[in-house]
Length: 116
Image (cartoon, rainbow, N blue to C red; front, side, top):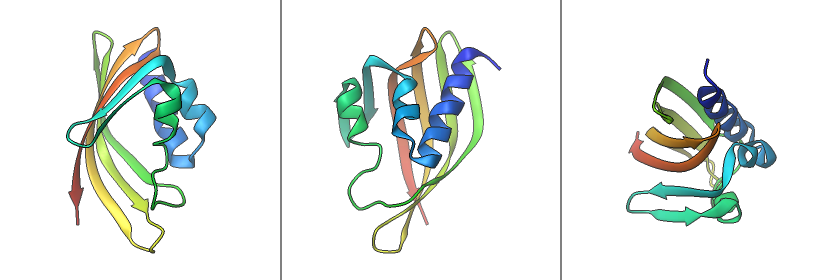
């Protein structure tokens, strides 16, 4: 497995355990995170504010079904089941596109779709 793919695996594992230091260690200082139509954050401090958004609790179940890499871009496809404070779950499928620099995430674009 390449360095870039290992970084993405560590990043996903950090989210599974809500391990902020592990997640942030996978990012460049000037990281950008874009969810088209929802938000665009820049820098580790802003990124950290969205690791667990308001209304969510516990640890999400994240399943990566495919991880593909070419030219310092890693694409991860999969699903998320995130517990909410009201006892329900948010179920999503995702396609995350990671632009990598020196083995760290420089930019992330997350394409998300809610499922039932």
